[in-house]
Image (tube, rainbow, N blue to C red; front, side, top):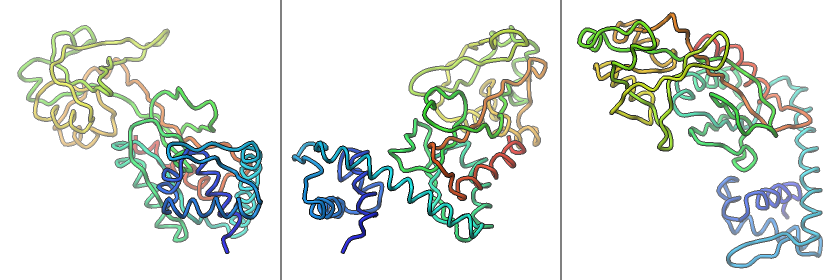
Length: 299
């Protein structure tokens, strides 16, 4: 006999993702098992929930109403479980976090691993990627994002830290080409440029009154990976504009030199994002609090 609440959760995920196969991939089930859960509900109710063809599926009129009720029931069940977890005072269960690749590995992951070390009942499921993440579709509890938030209107957000961008270069490059001392000097230097999705972004410098100044140095070397830019800068291939956390050790070792400190370091915010919920599970709350306390010291 199948568990009704589990079948409801599978049904809701199948509707949200649009197919049994997609739901199976997220839930760690086989597609036939997803179908069994849906059929169990249909047989129990005596009514069809989904119209299924080889190419698509769609909710029946009753299925739509039942889907909305299932979402409410599952939300209440989650809230009830969270209350029980609060009684124990110990974060537990699987925490699914989506985070950017380089920043996530360098700054976020160490904090979360330490959290897991301190809380043996906590499981971590970390997904690294630099693209847009849909928390509902991906089944994530939490996402970490850097830079501006353009698509977070339906999410709860909390600023965790501010990473700051600096211009730097290797001593060998500066010996060969001179040291820029003002923004206008950048036009006379080769730059290592970061691009994402084919687009090239200008370097930005904060202004006391007004928008940030935009500078586009000349460039023939473009990268879609910040670590690769740092490596190229170390061997003297040009100036780089990079987050301070990424080049901190290289600066300490003398492999890179910070330039234009008087122009200021442009701050990029780091946010935690999560879906609105009546009761934030302890595992999510503890993770957010740990990141807010420790990230500022790393960036």
